[in-house]
Length: 417
Picture 1 (cartoon, rainbow, N blue to C red):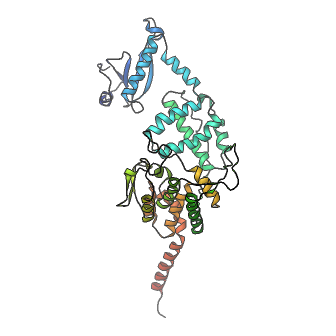
Picture 2 (cartoon, rainbow, N blue to C red):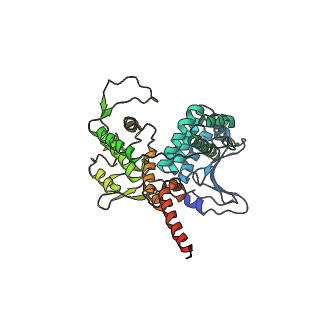
Picture 3 (cartoon, rainbow, N blue to C red):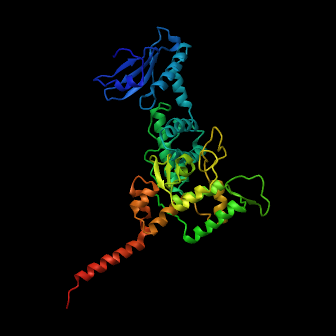
C-alpha cells in the first residue's frame, strides 16, 4: 500500500503497477482511493461503512470508474456524493445495485450518448448513433436494460430486414451501449445480447443523379428560392391542416445553398452544416472542415462553390444559417430533411436520399476519369477501400485502356510472313 496523496491526474499517471494490487488513498476525502492493478489498469474507488459509518459495520468498496473513463475531478465529485450518502446512513453500493436493476434502455442510451459518444466522437458519429436509437428506443426504450434478451434484439433486427444497413447499425449501436453500461457498472455484467446475432448482407446500391436529373434538380432549386414550389405533405408525419391548393413555399436561401454545396463539394452533410465563415478562405478557395469525420481536413472549392458562398448572406457564424443564427447560443442547422422532401418530390426524384447527393459528386468524378485515389481524398475517406464502391463506374475508361494495351501488345507479337 502506498502513502496517501491528494489524488490528481498526475498522481494517477505516475502510479506504477507492482506485483500485487495496491491503493493510493486521498488525503482530503476519507475513503476515496486509486486502485492500481499488476496489469497496469487503474480504477477510482470509494471505501465506506454503511448505515452511518458505525464501527460494527463491515467496510464496503464501490468502484467509481477507471482512469480512462473518468477524470480525477469527476471521480472526486462522485466520491463526495458517496461520502455524504454514507454519512447520512445510506449505502452507495446497494443504491448502485438498485439503479442497475431499474435503469431502462432509454436511460442507459441517454447516458451512453452524453458521456461516451458525444464526448469522445465526431458529430457525424453521434448523428449516426442517434439514427439507430430512433429505431431502438420505440421498440425497447421502456424495457429494463438488464432484462433485454437476445430474442428481443433479434426480433428488432429482423423487423428492419428491408433496410439491412440500418438493421446492422442497430445491432452495433446496441452492443456498444450495453458494453458501456457493463463497463461503467450501470448494469450487471452479462453476455451482450447482440453477440452471435448474424448480420444481414449489405448490398450497397449507389444511387446518383444523371445529367438530365441534375438539370431538373437545378431548375427546381432555382424556382424554390425565387417564386417557391408547391407545398407537399410528408406522408410519414401527422399533419393537422391540409394546405390550400396551389400554395407555394419559398425555400430558405441557406437551405438551397447547402444542397448545392453538398453536390459540388462531395463533403458530408454535417461537414456542410457545421462549416463556419471563419473556416472559409474565398481568396484561396479553401474550406476548412473542422467537424470532419476522421479529423479536420481542407476542401479545395471549385469556382462554382466560391460563387455560391460569395452570394450567400452572412447571418451568424455558420455558413448555413440556422434558426438561432446570430444569437449568443447559436447552433448549426440540424438537417435539411424538410426542404429536401419538397424539392425532391417536385423534381420527380422521390427515391433520392440526401446522402445520394454526395454519391453523385463521387460518381461523376469517376465517370469523368478522375482516379480513385483522388476521389478518395476529395471525399475524405480514410481508406481507398471505401471509395472502391465507385470503381465499376470507370468501366469505359478501363475498356479504353485495355484496348490500347491489348492492341499495342498484339502488334508487337505479330511476325512478318
